[in-house]
Image (cartoon, rainbow, N blue to C red; front, side, top):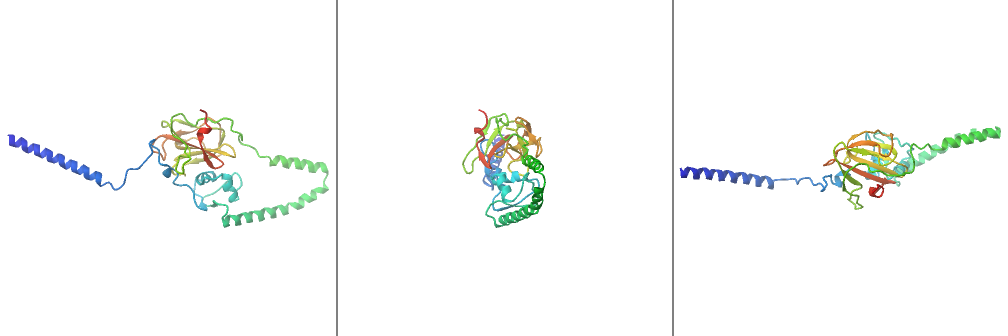
Length: 282
């Protein structure tokens, strides 16, 4: 009886030894390290902005806007539009070639063509203007007043940002950093479905998921200088070109292209990232 119990105990120990050896072998044979994320659970910045635009040329992809491309290139949309002779409202189309730098020879040629085209149009309309001298003075004054009114731009929203509002309720789990590989905005923790609100009055210039690393993204233009972005949303509730008010719900918080539910919020001044905490109320 004692011999039998001793034999069974030996079998159990042997089985345990085999299990331990298998576990050790599995750990040592891991060929790829586990993915590294920051302590807050969001994707590393290198992956979040892995689709940043670099180089001197870029081919437009479906779903992109000039604002989203300028965002990726870290340049002011007006600069990008000027280089490519694109007039407001900055319409672009898939497979269109854009130049990203001013010293591009092709961009210079395009500018030259545009100038020659505009000058030829101006020469054509000089004759009817000269003929109007024969008309009465009153008639010419009326036409001048009309043309001045037509040249005045109609603002779709206020150019001044009177007050900024927090885009979401929750704890700030990652702050803005000026380091080269630092965070370009702030990350706000929350629960799936929490409201994401416009931080100020503006117009939606991008709404979609074409920017990898940002997930479902909304970009709002507040005036000629300021843009704000809201990333990793679960659902987007606004459309491009839609005018929004400060505090209006524009999306629902989610974890698209992120390791946890949160809102990644950025503010850009003339194309450059700035610390959102300097604008948000304390």
